[in-house]
Amino acid sequence: MEQLFEGKVFEILPITNGIIFSYYSGEQEDGTVQVSYKMISFENRRITDIAKNIYMVTKFGNGYKAVEKLCENYITVKSLLLPGGNFFILHNDGSAQLVGSDGEPIWTGILTYRGFVPTDIILFGDGLWACYEEANIILKFSLTNMKQELRIGGKESPFEGPCDLFDENGTLIICNKTSSKIQKIDLNTYDITEIQTFEEPLYQYVSVNGYRFVSLESGLYVL
Image (cartoon, rainbow, N blue to C red; front, top):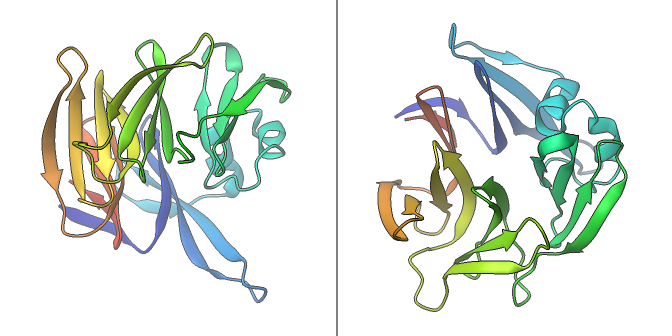
């Protein structure tokens, strides 16, 4: 495991030839958190500074200006690009929106579970999946009517603070912040396997072109 960046990483976004990530770069005089952006290229392994608009296009697509207007915090909001150019947006309070390519909301709703707010969402298979860190569960929702179809976890849960989901070649990967474990689920048998454990809080896992990255408390690493 090699540290690529030391500091607080907010989000890792995979791109064709590398990754882009946002990170904490200080505070302004009024206490507002300052966010900056970098890119790592697989071609030369160089880390370069990038402009905000590159990050925004990567996260929200070419229509990012319209989507940004709907987000109170574009860094912490979770977004999914859907077929046809539509977006699914999850806000910090658990409210969600299906937004058309023109930036106009098509559907609005709530994805909370017994008062708990999801920490991440992902399109996987034929549904939308959400993880709930405080409830130690993962839910699957129907893309047709947004009704809950499946729950994994609960009182006797195999998860400990699931905070991030990732689709790795058809395998659902789960990051657990509390236990600092990466797990995977076989959705044919629902067997859950531990992949790796870290010695500090784990926030995100991304794999691109054979490279695997994690965001930990101390920074960004390649495994």
